[in-house]
Image 1 (tube, rainbow, N blue to C red):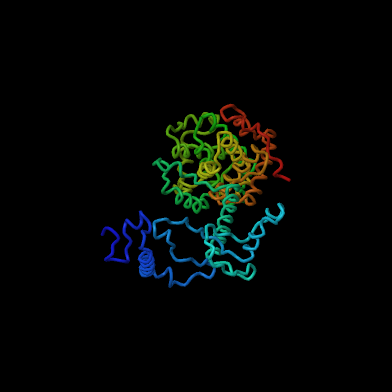
Image 2 (cartoon, rainbow, N blue to C red):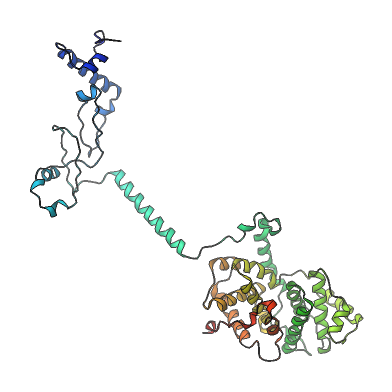
Length: 428
């Protein structure tokens, strides 16, 4: 279609757009514009027949500039123009400088023609549009979530201590949670009655403490693993809880329990002659073997029980420990081995209380993180009784006759852990 498109009056040709109106064609151009408006109404009836929003500004039909290809700048979608604002704009030159700085509630519509209709809006009675309410509610929710996130950031976060060992097959991350749930249920099988010494007629609590203090020194001299010492103490208490022993056989029970623990935990087991020698040859080889049979049969070969060591490794990892905290924690729990009254606490509680007491000693204040509380399942209040008792043991560790643990942890190999100050503020 070229030229003026006389056969199709509803279409404007290129000549009309480039050259404007030619002489004598004014009537035809008006007709074209009118038909073009009808065509636009047919294409998009929603612009005319759709129900306008009650707060929207009424719009004029397309002007001649739009038809000729000159599109005016878009009208920003702000709040409607009110008569109050129109009066303020008319008297703008008469306002004082201080008054011009006051915020104006209404927003003008730029580039609006003179015949633009103005909608009356009552600022006080006008309802807020629904999309404005949704936007305000959304902004309030975002601000609230940001405040909650900042509060969570400031608090002690709960850490996943197994995340770093996902690629380590020896850490068995897939089963570690179930393993410690089983240990928690099975630890009662390895516990003994806290008053079992009443059944013994020839030995007492003091003799038990002397035996275990001496075995701690033997364990240190033989350079055995930590697991061996924990299992040795457990075997002694479990055996004495079901068998009556004379005081002459008590040391034999101690070295036999260490022999069994070495066979269970160590790679290189000390020979029986070494154990007889360290006991000043008080017993023969046959007596050691006979006691070994008696202990195994009495315990029904049940040597695999959760000791405090099992929980110590897990709880130290939850506490994000270093070597200093680890050594001090072991010092606390070995002090508890000597004391008969500590038998009333389960192994998991002993381990958690030892770590909590060591943390308080190093930091100088109470410190028990959410991560430690989660993985130990013990709160700070549940640990206080056991922890206070450990503090008292620490205070008197260098006094009296039972000083085996104190001498062991006063060496450089164990980081001079015994020389640390006890957290006496826990006793207040």
